[in-house]
Image 1 (spheres, rainbow, N blue to C red):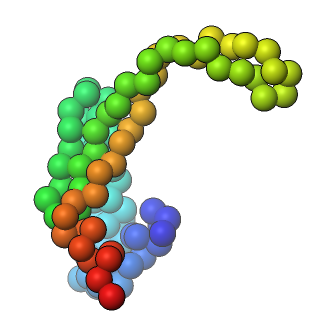
Image 2 (image 1 turned 180 degrees about the horizontal axis):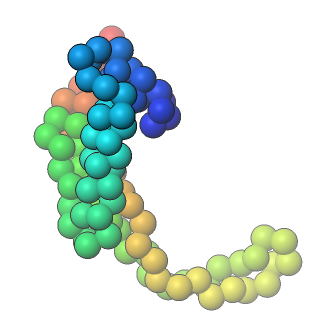
Length: 93
């Protein structure tokens, strides 16, 4: 599902809201999650999951085209861990 599909689905379920308001709400939520992760905070949405940052240490990699060794610096990557309710809902038969 894309962001625009999410907005469309919310609009269908909430016809009393204007589309521009739904776009603003969705954008604000994503922006707040992004800003919290950039600060190093953890974002937990009960029943859904938790977003956090994991650090990858610096390492020596290889250029796949030339096989040459390349130094790869330390970096932060986003990590998502599903919540118990989401896992149970996905795994019910």
